[in-house]
Length: 455
Image (cartoon, rainbow, N blue to C red; front, side, top):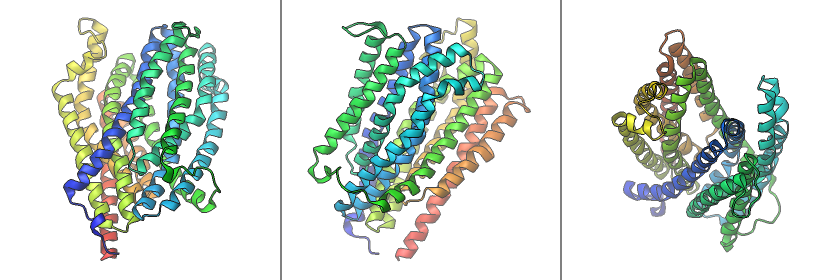
């Protein structure tokens, strides 16, 4: 297993290649986050009830689709390996199998959204809220298929080292989403007035538009336009084998942070509001290391397809330097300017209730310094390991870190030890730190083993 010159880049070359992937991916992800933020802001203009129903419906939809996006992320692993091995003929069957799995994964999600009203009533949500959420999610249900198909295309294009179309499509979609949201909610510019359901309609239409645009982007490349053709059962099986642990990893992390929000709710509205502010900031900055992790997935898989484990190890290190370095800068900003960040959310220190929220936000942003760095590290390590087709053990390590350490420490510090909101966040940070260390150790151990085997 000799590493050719093509797969023996210097560290600076590898860092540059990773950065060229990371930047457009981060732009696309930030645009996606911006769409959800736009929906929330515009729903707030319709009043408390519209914001409550639409906000909860969006959270349910986004949470479930994010987990399934992890399921189709396995497409990028196989495509990057085929790219590195210089076997372009293996790539179209991967895309075909990915579309099939995305379609199959969408069916149970659509069934859940169709039955969301009785499910919400089962957990004692108010009947009026459950009815309004169900009406919103019934429209979003029509956007499930294009959402998962677009996730398939995004993973595919990224693995081909073509992330720029994804970024452009996402930026254009962000603008169109805002236009359609406002127009359909208020009935302006010749559009019908649909109230809060106009937001759901806009989001659904934008999902279909993004899928159509990505289809055009893929079809313009004659090398990979062969979407039609026979399905390969072996490829389908391998994608499912790699994909379900990624979805499982996403699920255990999302559930941890959902549990953190529920614990904050027990502490009262001040703690919950502060948590929402701090987690919004952390979630936004997290898009960059998450993108670096996806870039590591592609670069590691590319080098492993060429049987170049030393270059694959270097790719993981390059992504780590970029992602963790960025998060360290963000942590420094949070530590030095917490009051300024809090004011970005229209919190007025002259108002007594807002002043209480700001005081808690400042504490949480201080903790977020550690939170940011370890969260970025675990995302990059997980992405790099997927490049080795290693998905099951990272899921197990993440499950232990989040639920064996993170949740119990958050509960103990927050309640029995009386540290409140700060204690819960220290628990979340502890879970992320343990996960980052475990995944980092796994990456170092695995790469050293592969390099020795190659020698």
